[in-house]
Amino acid sequence: MEPRLTSAQHHPGSDVDAKAVVVGIDFGTLSGRALVVRVTDGAELGSAVQPYRNGVVDRTLPVTGEVLPPDWALQVPDDYRDVLRRAVPEAIRAAGVDPGQVIGIGIDFTACTMVPTTADGTPLCELTDYTDRPHAYPKLWRHHAAQPQAELITRIAAERGEPWLSRYGGTISSEWEFAKALQILQEDPTTYAAIDRWVEAADWIVWQLTGRYTRNACSAGYKGILQEGRYPSPDFLSRLDPEFAGFVADKLEQPIIGLGERAGRLTAQAASWTDLPVGIPVAAGNVDAHVTAAAGNAITPGQLVAIMGTSTCHIVNGSGFFEVPGMCGAVVGGVVSGLWGYEAGQSGVGDIFAWWVDCCVPGSYRQEADRRGIGVHELLSELAEQQSPGEHGLLALDWHSGNRSVLVDHDLSGLLIGQTLATKAEDVYRALIEATAYGSRMIVEAFNRSGVPVEEFVAAGGLVRNRMLMQIYADVLGMPVSIIGSRQGPALGSAIHAAVAAGAYPDVPAAASVMGRLDKSVYVPDPERAARYDELYSEYVQLHDYFGRGQNLVMHRLKDIRRRARKGRAA
Image (cartoon, rainbow, N blue to C red; front, side):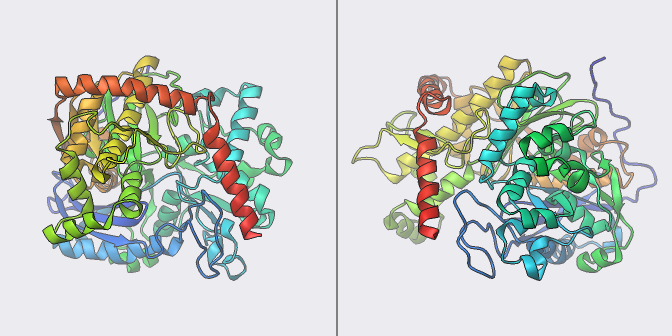
């Protein structure tokens, strides 16, 4: 029998106080956000943001200043604790509620971000003997230096006919749990030996809140190769490296908690950080993208949710399993219980636009933006919006941070063609936006071709505030774009899961139907622009396949030359 989405009553439990609120905490790439939400109707009452003091550690190691190799991206775990200590109390104050009204907490995290810890959850980088070891720090999702290990895992799995490989589109990503752990073993065996627990950051935060270590079903299924209750076998792992055979049993395996379930209760220590009542329920951890579907009540098969920020993650539910090339995973119950949750994504989106503005835009644009009291992104969008499709004569590949889907290759890189001496900053800015839209279309078409229908494109995240960008997406996709009715989708989604864990709703669909919000068809494609973009997209597909499917490996060779040059300079 195919799984079916079920939902009980669509109202909070009768014993829930009308003033009851929940807190959703979204841990992003650069900051964490806490959101206070009323349980009875999903009203957002107050929020606060806490930037990470160390941000993304991708150039030099904290404390020692050691220069990191290319493709590294680390973080500092105490930055995460700061979100609990500062953002949560501030959000409660902003909401104007009594902390005693809070009945539950839910959290989500960018994934796959991994924290190496001791048996009691202490991050290795916080131990004196390991502060100078890069592999002792959390590896952020966009740490792509484990690409060789990912390729090894994929190759051996294909040779052995491992049945789980098809659940991940035939390719394992360097962003995920196994590749990053194998990199540590092969590059720093001493640090690997010291790791007692290899922990998803979402689960580490829940551990900090509850004093109890559990693994959430979402992260384990999509990032930890957990299918039908089993991880890859010790025999398979030993083929990767004999010392890796015991990885699952020794460092990874832990009880699995379903989404919306109660992982534990708030400890006295965590209560002192957050100023919240001791003992309130804490929901199982979740991934920022997957939890956002509930925020828009967009969990019906056919509704693809794109969470658009520094990167974009694409989530869609289906009623059965289909092999989709290059997807990030297909997991039963990975988004909501009873359905197959599919994930795909783009490793760089907002990051690409930020790179262009930070590194390449002339100073005259900044001066003009300052004179008008607007941001450079806003100025470039205003100028680029005046163009018609193709007017700038440019075409780009959106691989500045590699390709997550559908090629799953982080040794690919960005490309821009068509430049002349007349090319302006706003021309490139628009071309980069269009490239990310083409990348999303590749993903949508891959799902449709494989039997997972995409009937509605639902956008969430910080980039939805850019009207030009969203209209370009509608025109490129040739389909209406709906918008989640909250600018804080992941945090709202986490709050919805908190309400379920607290017993206010019987399940996530019931809570989402009351607390989630979706604005339908906010952007509608223009037929003339869509036709022009069809023409440009066909050119994008040719470039995509030429550089991405092995016809020309120049991007791989350039990455290899860069690594050797950096390594030689460091020596």
